[in-house]
Image 1 (tube, rainbow over the protein chains, first blue to last red):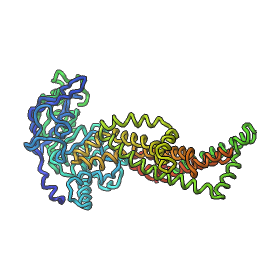
Image 2: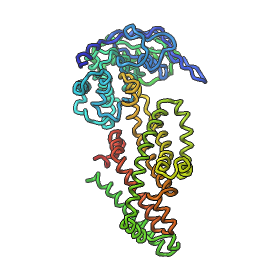
Image 3: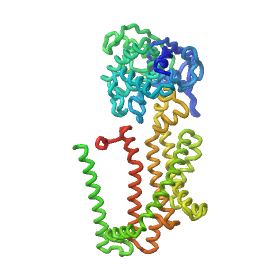
Image 4: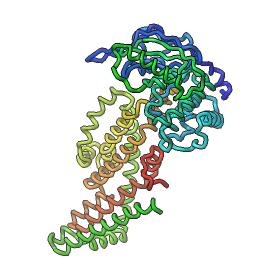
Length: 270
Length: 263
């Protein structure tokens, strides 16, 4: 398979959660983490999930990624039930989770090995293309620990995007970065999404981040997470983190979060 | 260069410390606190070693011990890594083998010698058995722990990139566990070296352990101390030769290296 053929199945995915709930049962307790919850994410949409800490946002992503199976209901990608993790749904974590035994280029090329049939030269070419896309050209040979936090997360995005997944699942990817780096990455992620149009599910508890990035913001309740409300965002792109309309929207999201009587009072991450 | 200076400083300090040890040893000997037949002087030890090297006694024994060690260690490492991998990947295998291996680790190397002689008689097989039994448990446990402590995000990231089954084990689990595995293999090397000398001490007609034993039989304290020093030196030297490269590589890649250690 060539790079072009790999691009053949690059159409963005439609992600459907139909009556999905998740209960964790341990010998001591049983915890309802999520749902029942129904959500339909259209092809190429950038959907941001916000909710109080510990409300089950990560569980929702793990269900879509296939790391966990729902207790009830079904997660579907283009109508087909998700039975486990797959290269069509790439995950980005708060920790970059880059492999320290590989250099940056080999990290980005890692997922391409699974396509089979791509020569080493083709994998390298694709890796370089994605490193350019995230502005990391020149760092192909660097080891992971030699990169700054922001550069690591950029490399993680390149690694996730290189095998041309049809959906991108982001679990607070900017949560451990400093404010300056984060603001730069908001702009870059909007660019990246405009270029690649992957269906994106993005989890955060930062309302301004949500307002800056989303086509649609889904506000979740405290555990077990259910959909409290959804908000379509029509603001033009690219959006600046300091755009007053973004601030206004962030305020609206915060108001909705606080309207949930079960959410924690006085959250400060507006 | 500023990066080289601290390293050189450390080496100078180490050399000074070794000279100090030698001086204390010489001092204790000169004061005559202990009888001459139990504590030789540094010069006597050096002289005896030169003699052993000169009359062709030392070299064949060094070679015999090293060859036994390398063969026994390779066998032990293959077994230890395979068992450790099985333990790391299967919790059931882990719970079965772990307590057994922890128990084995409490047994000193020399305690394996009698059963080795009963099982294998007076041959090299008994020595290989002692090496394997002394070192395999430590290597298996370290490998299993190395795999158990892999950050879960590495495995999740790999799975969401489409990696599963054998590729997940060889392309992710093994390299991610490498720092732990190398620690285990190094520990196994040291324990195996204990094993080979212990076994030779009791049963052998050649080897460092045999020379130790012969020295005691002849009341030759200089030979006993001299062979101890050779054993320590060889253990350290082989450790460096075998593992320095891979440890350095891991430190540089994982970012464990201090700036002064980078080449």
